[in-house]
Image 1 (tube, one colour):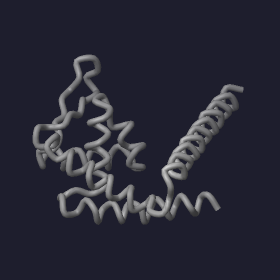
Image 2 (cartoon, rainbow, N blue to C red; image 1 turned 90 degrees about the horizontal axis):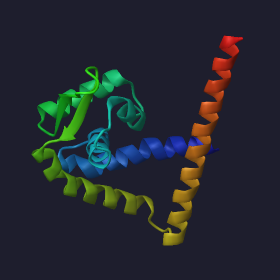
Image 3 (cartoon, rainbow, N blue to C red; image 1 turned 45 degrees about the horizontal axis):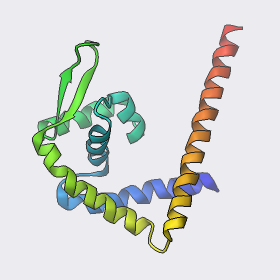
Length: 150
């Protein structure tokens, strides 16, 4: 079953990634924040909560720890006084190459035995499934809103 496959990949994949990151002093959640902020400079707590599969309160605790550790800085935005921009500090940026290498090792161990074509097919399949799930979620939300207005 797809849901069981996803559960196994999710649970044991995170555990294996944590083993790769532990010598660097990071865990998978901190790595996700670092890479997300690197790739998406305007990443906010809403996006991070989706990527980390947790609520904004837990994201706040994680960001507070990372700020205390000197990996990130948060500053109020000029456009919206309720929103803080998250950026990597110099110390955080200096950790990125090692984090990327750890991710490469982890991905290589996950893809062991697969050809480049199979990896590309898997990546495409995952993207399609994710798009389908988002589309289904949007339709469900729209249908629920419609029922509430009737």
